[in-house]
Length: 222
Image (cartoon, rainbow, N blue to C red; front, side, top):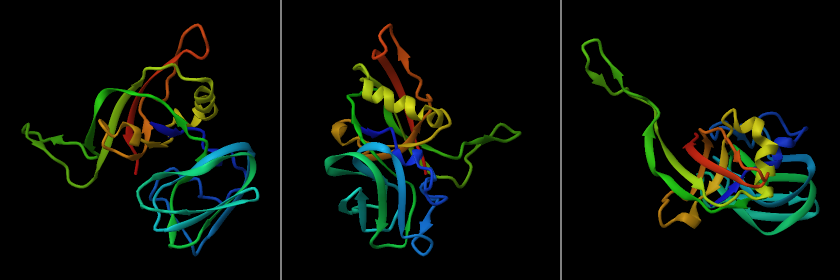
């Protein structure tokens, strides 16, 4: 899978308030703001991830490099750049069309091999309740969300470990990340995914700092 762990926007200090909301429905309208300009610590960037939007074209400016990205779906998706841009400190995101955008992130995605430990599933957000007479009644309302559990069978390399540790304080609070499961399409029919790890990114390491194992239990966010 490909995963954007270390979202460089989260290090930003002067981004317009609300632009780093973690929920997709938390939208910023173009009438409020059509361009996000901010400074980040020197970073390598090879992708941008976009949550809920009706935008069909987005312009990303990385330093002096201008990239126009066609937005192909409103569901959360990672868009990969044609190259990795290094040592970027100034970023601008402009919406060329549409009326709103929700959560977005950018940084350097990581590729990892995974093995399933729990089949992909769908669960409701509303649980059933029991009446005084013992009857189980399904609650109305709510929605359905996707879940998946898997292991990292290979050792987590130092880049991934550094990404996790850099954002650990957010992940233990349930902060979501963008994931692309297209490499596992033979057993994970999910494509792009936006969710949080219910295991709170608990790393288990051996005597060597780079020997980490990880069990993920991801649940979709809305």
